Length: 109
Length: 114
Image 1 (cartoon, chains in turn purple, brown):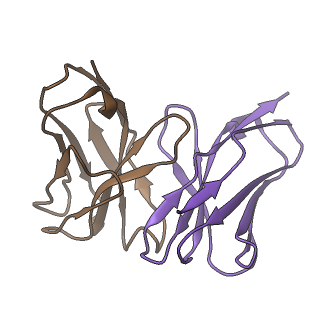
Image 2 (cartoon, rainbow over the protein chains, first blue to last red; image 1 turned 30 degrees about the vertical axis):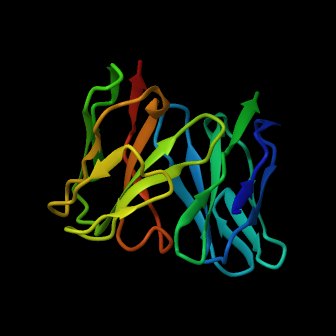
């Protein structure tokens, strides 16, 4: 079966750095996505990785290792507004998105 | 403001009733999708449409139907609602396929079936 694993919940301190991991087992791989979802709101796109390595976009970076079936989202200089759920999704061999259950990130002052 | 509009935002429905969730986009995207989101589970695809006039089944299509008469509208119908269809439903769209780039989501429709 296809599976995306993420931690259910993480806690971090304002101003700090946090890394949210995502491991996947899918039938094929055609890209990995990270979305942010604030409570009660729609998911919004953060990043896309299809090749190994690090993609940096401001305070957020996303890393991919296809050989390990592993990705992480790195958030720097955490702000209270970063409190949200972070969703990892993988496009499989049929180009269908398989979604993880999301990681709820709690930021404390 | 460009984007996706869903209606209603929230609805309580008696089991056995018919319900249509509306979705309209003004970005002229080819592809549209309906997902459901349940606590502890990832988003699950119900139905999708790659272009106007075509639809396809996703991971959890049973009990739901869709139509795509034009580019902008993609309604989701529950023919006879059951309590297991209690969920938050998200409509989304993309320029290309869901694997090719950003998905744009509506604000969601919270449906409770009693």
